[in-house]
Image (cartoon, rainbow, N blue to C red; front, side, top):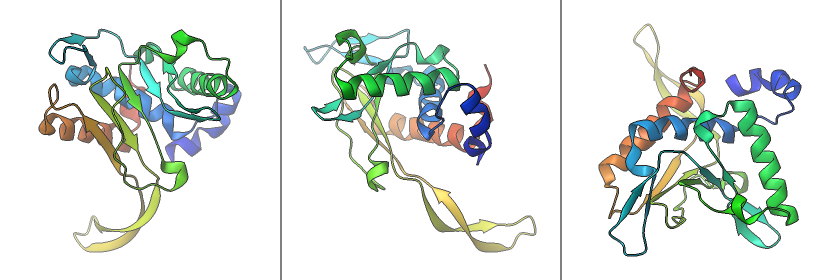
Length: 196
């Protein structure tokens, strides 16, 4: 609802405001609290390199297969900048004009099969990263909700599963679950990701 309320402003900014800029912004915020996800693991399988920047890869389906263009320094971009950069990079990947530096160097990747109807996925880690996030399709489902009167009732709510895959040599399951919960909180309360 918040995203839709910003549609006119997004258009005036020359941006298509899909859920992806919100997810990228949420990941950039969450990586501050969970820096163990913003690393790369060297080929020796033992050396971990901590990154001081957030370069988010976005999986894009192209005629030549899956490509992962990279939004550099995502932590410093606002929603409009992210939305414009997503559009630019996705188009470059699809038409074959993406430069090699635009297709490498990500610290965390987001991949989504939501548009194809996926509600739960097992994304494959984009090495040398140690984690990948998979937002799934947003669908309306019945949900038990307790009203202010204390009475529980069923209401229709928009829900989305967030999948994550991690390299357990670097990230344990508790941290993975905590990271996803941080993303959930940021996405459910989008004002939190707009505070700089």
